[in-house]
Image: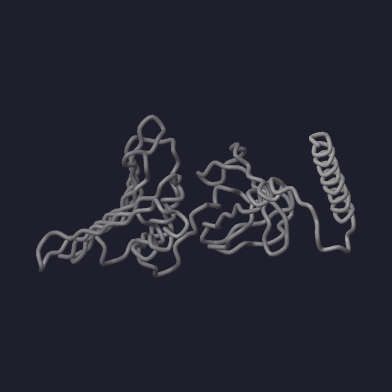
Length: 263
């Protein structure tokens, strides 16, 4: 009796194994048939492909950024990608291979408007740049959807007739040049001031060339130590207003702040 049960169990297991084996063969055939909708897919390949194709960067150059045929600045220009454009990254060049202005970087392979080419990554950022006339508070709220560690604060001091308002924006992992262009757009200091060089005097002052008649001060102050920035500040002052826009590091994170005093 026991022998019959064992034989029956073995027969059932054998039938189940053959059935599974046939099913695997059948699915394998379905995979090879392009007309069929059912396919066997390795999910790890999908995940890897998704990660590779989910990287996007934004154009931060005010005048737009050239898309070139090859990974050098002298190759054919395929298009100009406008400020704020979101581009898909095909290959990320992490090694600095060139210098444009005072920004060091390399040429990323990107896709824009169904075209593949190369663009200087010194003007490509994971942080989308601020639109014209957007407030720092609104910009921080929009950034938080993609970068939750971004922080904004606003404080007020002084008197009713002489208020002092300070806004502070913390941008984790940002580069100095990224913060510089954000500050320039958000807090409106002259675009004639270009991103400064790391090398230079410990304290350097650049005056605005197109100086306004009602302005007493309009200058960029650069503070360095051992060829590293410690602080970059824009100072503006006239009869009724004093404004300081600062870029500096706090606890390893870049901070953009504006202090405005109405007199």
